[in-house]
Amino acid sequence: MARFSLQVLLQLAFLALTACSRAPAPPPSLAATAAAPHDNLNRIVERYWDEHAPPGVSIAPQYLADSLALERRYLAELSTVPRARLDADAGLTYDIFKRQRESSIAAYTYPSELLPVNPFDSMPQQFARAAAAGFAQQSLERATEYAHWQGRIEDYQRWTEQAIANMRDGVRRGYTAPRVLMERMLPVLQSLGEDASGNVFYVALRTKPDSRLAGAVRDKLLPAYRELHDFIRDEYLPRARASIDWGALPLGPSWYAMLVKRATGTQLPPSEIHGIGLAEVDRIRARLLALPASVAPAAGNLVGAYQELKLETLAAMPKDFSSLPPTDFEIQAFGPASEAAPLLSYRAAAPQGRASAILYVNAARPAAPHTASFLSEAIPGRHYQSALQLERTDLPRFRRFGTEPAFLDGWALYAASLGEEMGLYRDDEARRGALLGQLKCAAALVVDTGLHAQGWTRTQASAYLRELLALEDTDANSMTDRFLALPGDALACKMGELKFQSWLAQARQLLGSRFDIREFHAEVLKDGAMPLDMLEARMKLWMEARR
Image 1 (cartoon, one colour):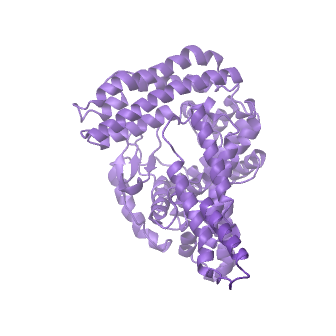
Image 2 (cartoon, helix red, strand yellow):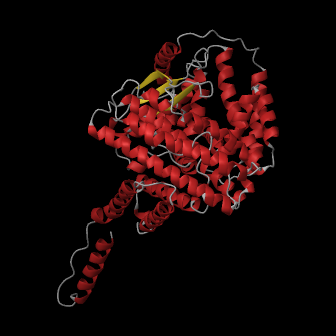
Image 3 (tube, rainbow, N blue to C red):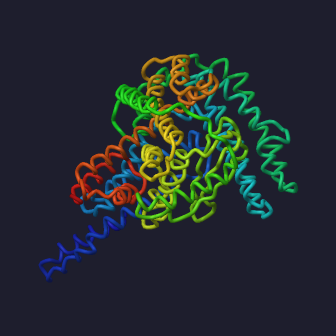
């Protein structure tokens, strides 16, 4: 891009010097001039995708410094593209890319690398899930497969060493995790590091008894888990903080505000989100109280039952959607299943067809099929949205494979609300399940902001959840601790869903008899995940055009 600019300047200088001796050259065509900003934008965003995740330990100081420099460099390159000369689609790509780079740069203000582990979703659990799935799905007989996982195990060893160094630095600088979370982390690490046949890594290798990876797991991977466990137990736990809220950390209030903004895609302060949550809790509870008392449904073959529900949902979709999912998804029993895991969890397809989309069913929690969860996690929820986005091969890769929490989680919760419209909520239990899902997300607005910005205690939060959602003490404490460990994350589903519902109501009112819910859904989903304020602007333009 710099060479192109220099070339243009040289050409202009040459024309100026020779203007008196010969007629000026004709101007470049309008088509060529208009295409240049679009082409430059595409080159920038595609190069970013190739460079944005280099190999290395993601929490190491040099890696972080290099990553911040890369974000700043690409934001500076983007500023050389004239936004006003882009068409609507390229302008959207420009705006999303700019927002993401600015958000990433702002996040480097806060040293999240000093708090690298939590008992719900951090690298130790993420690596265990990835390795268990990879060991089970790959033959591990080819040298390339073995070398790949051997390298990943060694990377995890280096990550563990860096995590310990970072946590020691965090102790010195006043950035420590709550003691209650580290107490919950210890049994997680103990289980993952135990050299026993029931270990998740060995279970995944059972069908490959001759695999050389078993030795790497025994001699490298499990000791890394044990080293982290022993460090937390012996050195870190005595120095972990008694406080629980994110605001107690240095820069904590502004850090939490940043996390809230990233999760919700809004500028709303935590106090206002707290009030929205309280209002939503009251509204949903009133609807639940209007339903008859619940009746425990009989359990059966869950995977088979969800296969039948899949066919019913596909048959019902044309009423509300202009197209069916462009790709299929498998339904499998979740393994290893556990009472703590959700009823259903969706894994999107991998790029280039490396792995198909899967809906996992937790058979350890016996129950009848949960229609609302299926609509949310599969169709028309996460799978439908993901499949449509992946089909957009014309999008730059950072958008085609990108995520936006409030969009994705909000759409999933909104999709569950369509069960009545689609004729799939045929009894009060199905309706109750949908309302309970909404109530859980509304409660997250109250409790997450309560804990981190309103001075709530852990006991207060657990008691609120226990009473509101009729939870056992263990479940209420676990849900509370997840809010403590992952501040802001749980805000995305309700805040996003409220936006989708708001646009739906506006479109119905504005368009009247011309409103078509299939067109509405197609417009919401056609450009993939994006910040909700950008989507809101596009939806307003669409409504005006349709009117």
